[in-house]
Length: 444
Image 1 (tube, rainbow, N blue to C red):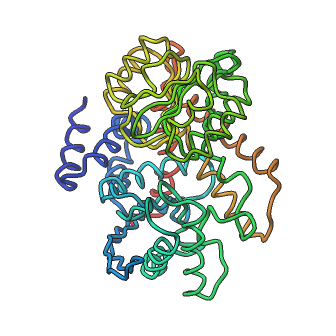
Image 2 (image 1 turned 135 degrees about the vertical axis):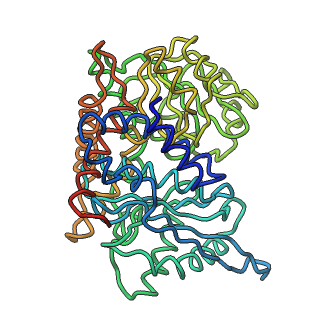
């Protein structure tokens, strides 16, 4: 490691104490960017482009006060991290989960800058949310919370300023309540939020976009190796939208999906999931164990992860840092040849080092799961021109965007031995456009 890299990370740690997720994300990116910048664009060091990208343009924190169904006052904390607007208005999701804190949102916003750049859509990066937990809350409680949350957030967002979307804990229901309150406050029906319902300004394919896009990217990876996904065994973590639609598309492309998981354990079906089985699974909510009541060959492994099962492709689609060093070694030992992230930073730094050392193909979330924000960008385009495109049109555009992201990763990540370092390719490919724009726009 160069002294400039060590100095920058130490400086970042000093300015951002007790923010491990943010430091992890910065470290992962900067170790690729500094050698590239020193070799190709030394003047960018003088302009402190990297240091400026690390520092958010704006950090907003606010109190959210609301009444539960028992008329008891509840207090949560809301955030919006507006990270970088060099390429366009801020864009990034809202996460409602008790683990939400400044470190997690800053890491997500930082990653979003590179992810949005890779899509080719003119968008800046942002993230936001609250430590509010929608689980176990009534619809009325969620509505009251969302309205109170928007009573502050509306001051900082707009269709050409900052366009939030959904994330963990924020689906179409929450987006609807947030949008309704924004409309009430501003007296405007605008594209200020994405992930809206398809009958009121939303886009077809948005719920499927992250999972579908993930598989389009994996398909590109295998095509570059002159292989297909037909017959490949796939393990997936998570049981939400991303995991479900990743499995659906994997099955459509001829792969065999054998796992889903949640915080209690892993559901393993050695026969592979089918569209019929997926539909049944979608009716179970969090009760994955209920699946085996109908499909007796399946097994539910309490407190286990999907990474202990034999597979060709692993798709972590749950949450950050879910796949550690031991899990990575398990995957290697079981013959895995490709890991592609459906979640944001689900692999630890140590796990990624094992993937690269073993020369298996690893696709980071900033590239592989960019389909969600890509279709959010397409939703914005439809809102601006007052149209709604067909599902096929949106899906085809999503596929092209993921193919172009893959080409960018190949361009900047292919090594002399032929191995493709997709993480390096995504970091550099996402950085260049942002850096060029920041230089052009001056010291702002």
